[in-house]
Amino acid sequence: MQNEHPPLTAYSEEKRQAAMVKYKIIAPYLIGDKTLTDITKETGIAKRTLQYWIRDYKQLGLKGLIRKTRNDAGKTHLEPEVIVSIEQLILEYKRNSLTSIHRMICEQCQKKGWQKPSYYQVYKISQSLSQSLKKLAHDGQKAYENQYDLIYRREASYSNEIWQADHTPLDIIVLNEKGKPERPWLTIVLDDYSRAVAGYFLTFQDPSAINTSLVLHQAIWNKSNPEWKICGIPEMFYTDHGSDFTSNHLEQVAIDLKINLVFSKVGVPRGRGKIERFFLTINQLFLQDLPGYLGNQTNTSLLTLKELDERLSNFIIYNYHHRVHGTTKKEPLHAWNNSGFLPNMPESLESLDLLLLNVAKPRKVHSDGIHFQGLRYIDTNLAAYVGETVIIRYDPRDIAEIRVFYQDIYLCTAISPQISDYTVDLRDIVSARNKVRNNLKKQLGFGKSVAEEIAFLKQKDLENHSNKSSTKKSKLKRYFNE
Image 1: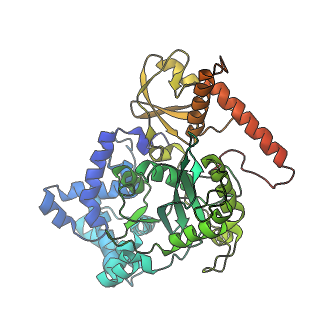
Image 2: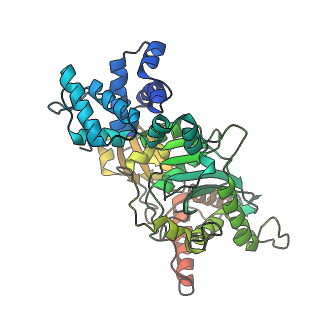
Image 3: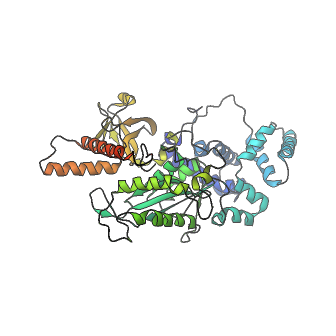
């Protein structure tokens, strides 16, 4: 079944954009703004074609709108007319039970010579209709706006119902890869209900769609640290109108994962209070005691970004998540998991590849693997592609491995044997490269490569962590920011 419906990343950008065009045509119908007749008059597209698109999107997300060869011969499907009639009956008769709706549609089918649906098929169609569409149809425009357009006015009623995201420059100066003082940015994804942190990213770069995508990928997928349990696909992702949040890439991913993107009005960043409170907590309970804090001019010894990253992850996982929140009166971790619910997860890690959109230049597969950032990456699947050009995607927070794509299809995950035993941030590569260069200038360290320098530094870090383990509780095993 997995081969029957490959992930969105298996299709070319051209096909994904074509699917986006189809989605934008049917979107007004999906949210109840227009009828199919209205859309047909405006676009000239046949109503039956629109019905097929709507059905395919509801079944498979954005993947369903990509033109491909069908492989479902022999399966029984309801006629689009029957599906549309069932949806109309559900939306028109608010107080009728599904049993009543099933009886009504069967009467219609008998009169028009259509195949009668089963009760289960009626139930599945009812489940596929969004709550926002039902709210609009049953209770009117004003009730819909109060609950959905003005989402900032209401509290989430359960975990993963609403996630919020925002960026801020931190009030601290740390050392960058070149050893120069610089102020970092923090991107955060917060669960509205529990106030738990689902994901974060520290960087010296200004906010961008790439960084936002990396944070959302981290937030959705399982963390390597079992103490950080927050994961899953949110129902709504609430952000402002920054270009990094409104990119075509993020829109594609949200549509395919069926995340409802909710934006504040341009110039009116409403509902940011919860995120702002978290940033205030970071300032008051975390940053103020660190060297380099902007309000503390006495300290001159600065942390590196990597050291700040490690301390921040420990603060979030072992302190903030277990501290009673002033508004909810609950610990964020317990509030997120108190009902024991199972989060809605993607089919696979590969299905999130579009969120790992740090795409390098095309790389040629050599007989000894793929060369990138002074490292060599290998995998047995590459043997059949020697001489071919591939595209690689990678997470800059750990480039010990890269994902390899051939003609827009996922091929394999290649690792660098030189650093496979370590988690290597792209910033580590830059620092090691600078150190090797400086050593060579001083006529020292002949023969030491960038990979060897990284391995040496990583081994030194592990030894330091091992020496501290007797006095500190458990540390993150792999990712410093996950």
